[in-house]
Length: 172
Image: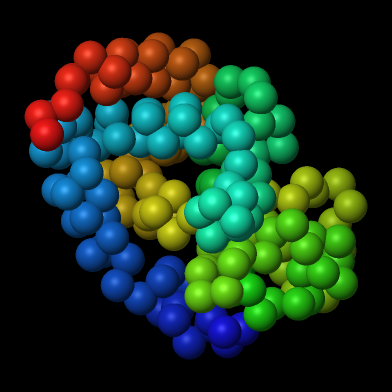
């Protein structure tokens, strides 16, 4: 459970991440009429709020330092922080005061921590594999970089995409 490094390619990306991009696009968002920019806006704007709870989702921790206020922190942190893939067996997180970032058994997530390195100035944060594809896929990354550089653009685009999402209705 703790040897997650074998699931990474030589660039540090999860092997098979392209399939996750295809799933997020085709099975989730494209069928609802969203394009790549709207996908990135929804994830950047939506994941700035709240946190994951291992007893509910199996994942653990907040995406951002201030999970109760709108910002472009999700985008900037994803691009600027160093991210490490972890599993429940990564007990080194406990030793550096980041036990809240250990996902439930069987799950993996990225954390802004590195084994053996304590950074008291860096709050405990996590990213799901489905978050990280925004940095890995060239089309998604284009919009991620745009939103990291321009919080007002994110605010406007998230508002429009969220409005579209809430007005779509439900076809099932």
